[in-house]
Image (cartoon, rainbow, N blue to C red):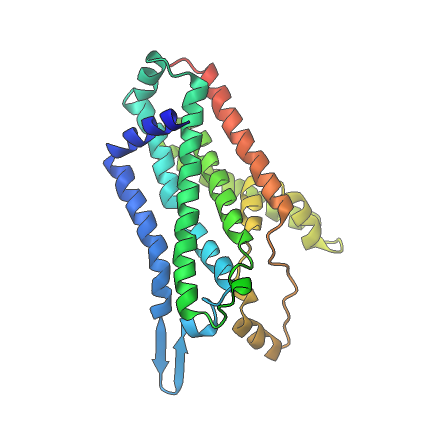
Length: 281
């Protein structure tokens, strides 16, 4: 494992574009803290985002992992560009000549995916803990350690997403086309979702029936890991109650979604290995 990771870090070290994208990604993760500086003072109306509770424990774990997951595309570009460079610079062929098996090559990429996801998770944990300790109204240890499962869901989501990018990178060999293929897959899922709503429009519990089918698709499963946190916010619920609306959705991390994403991760990695084994390099 460490030998394979050493090889990958050596490649990353001399890839300027990947280093820049990685720095941008972690810079953007750090910039979550800038949300606390958002203030609006318009006459008698004073609005300070940090004061409405977004950095309160344990809500901050949900909010920050959701926001951070939106930034994962920057590291996706690093993953797919690493694969594209393997073909462009013939390093894949050279690695195989030097004695690296195709299985070890795929494992080395998967280890990098796991490392990127793990470091991202630790980084989000550190940023969230710092912001929470400074801004949260609740600092009891039992409250701080509540909802930490969102960090695990964030890690699983990144591993699944990057594994998908790795598969498409090997499939099409070009980073731009790999990202484009993932976008196409996303639109296919969206079109399929629309068609399901149309098919079940005359049925009762349409949304539940559609969700029961869609939960097995990769993008939908990843989205289900960390649901949007905004309607969970107390201030939003208060406004909704005043206009007669109520939110009854569950925001908890669904264990079934973790299993589905883990299965898709295995599928993407297995297909990547199959592609590489059948391809004449």
